[in-house]
Length: 430
Image (cartoon, rainbow, N blue to C red; front, side, top):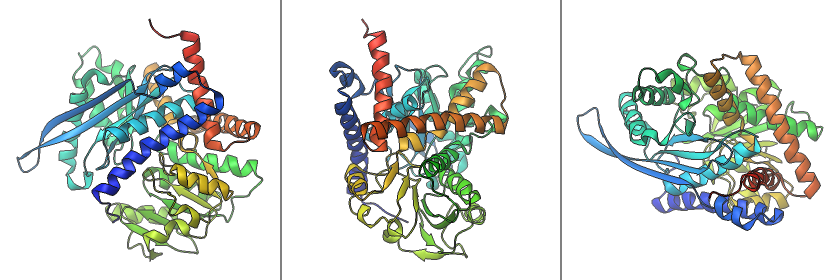
């Protein structure tokens, strides 16, 4: 397992906030963003820190710290995931909430940005303890979340089951007559609890579609292309699954436990089955060899998909990267210095606020279905998802070409200009 010192963890968290601010400042400078609107977008609207007690299986009480940061809601209700991870803190939540604002704006959704979570290592707790922790956190958040105010979703180490616990707890605080009208307080729910077909694969499918759109734009055939994936959770798996269907070959994977490689290709379905039988770990998979973690990003491949945590591609490993396309499945995986190195070398980066936006678009579809009492079929969801992502991708490519800038800067400009237009039209209260 990759173990970081407290100093390294702190640097990563501070780095994420620094990265998003530098990305924002860069785009804002290019478009000459109104100074007053800039002041508004540079800060978060609300920041909630809650400390709450939970009884453990052994009868002891443990105190947990949870966070919810609401960055901006000028376009609609706050929207963003909840993650359970030791690196969760107020700075990490601020950075991720800001990225969500740009992501929802770029996607043309009626949402703002939020993010949060609990600072813990979920592997150290039983399912029963995680359920109690989740329910107590939901209760502590109280009316700071809501179907028309702030709508959480799954993120790192949370899943549909987590969302079902939040839903049930939140609905239980409402009167019987109101409960069914609060079904859309969270998205990413299990199908039986009001979830949407296709939401499980929406983020990874979106990563794949962006790779496909880019390849079509460049007249590149994905067949026999070699790709590597960091993080074999929900996003990494589905991105790899659809790429494999296109004839591409997954040659290496890295997760929290280590790295594996097979130059002839690793079966996506076989690796998934193995991880399910081995507590989520890829290590020990028979049809691959162990690889040193430090060598992962320098592998010979065409496409690199970082789909785990932020700040993993740095100025240290960026010069070693051989892939000509990086598709950001994670939020903030590439730091600013690394991006400068990669762009100078001619590497294309599909930015996170575009590349992994399939998740929040899928969440929007789920929210709409709950709100309107509708149930959409899988093919309908995927068709709508592809159409929405194609619109975003086309705008970014066109802006990138027109202004002669990289795709991330183009994506930020589109997102910020939409927010600027909203403030110009509505004005500032009072």
